[in-house]
Figure (spheres, helix red, strand yellow):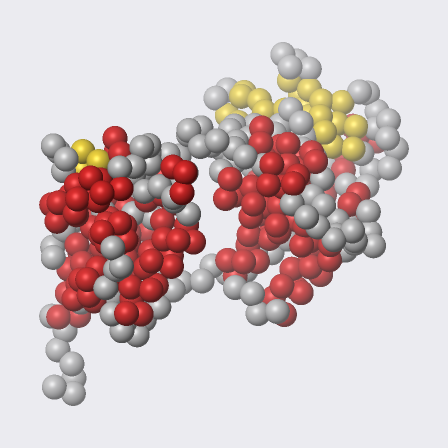
Length: 375
């Protein structure tokens, strides 16, 4: 590729229509390639060519100029921050961790871009982990030498190891982040196929089983943790981020701040849970977070998972119970008691009712009116 030949893409609005602007220095090759694009036009105002802004056209630009002209996507790339909440972005774990000498580390610019875009800590760890899996799979190749064929080979190795579709999709996201965001090449690998999304029913336990788990917790702190996970439909991360001020005992609500998608919401506070929370508060005297570990730091996710699993095992629940199973059960039990689906959506913090509709597939009242042909 001639390094002197290049085009720069821009976002344009022409007659209230979104366009892809293509700026370039006069060159016969580039002019000829632009003429081959779908319905190219020239803007005197912006002094550049343009075509309609569609995903298909962006792909056509890449295919047309690939190997002939360098495409500069920097002006075209959207740089909105991903996390505008109050969570402190901490990547020191990455720099301080111990690794074996042969292990290839994630490039510093990858980590810096995650910091600048303020991705959540959990997302940073996920992206770094998967990108390092990828570059260590091809450790004999320089990063700049890797192409679509190498990505497909890596993804194929994950599939052959029987990893889930979700796992493979996370790997794709981590790889795409490097090429599309760090290097500024959106849709650089738009032809990489994603696995079909799996459609699995949520695991749900009965109200009686939930009560049994609560009864089998070790102490008042553990009891309150399980009660809130279930009675407020909280995600584990949401529970860990709860502060004392988030419990509104006057309005009987729990305030969830900076949740998935950086959204705040209100959810239910149980009278039973509130009574136990008051006893817990007097005994443990948390300072900032509602549930704190040693030295007043935020309680760990692993501890919450262990509390739920241990209590479920003591209660002799056959299903593997996790904090998310309690959340699923909260939603399903509300639906079974006649609560409107839209209200459940708001309580769970779902962006769409389509996500909440999954609970109609496991709610018992869905089947109560159907007479079994055997009977």
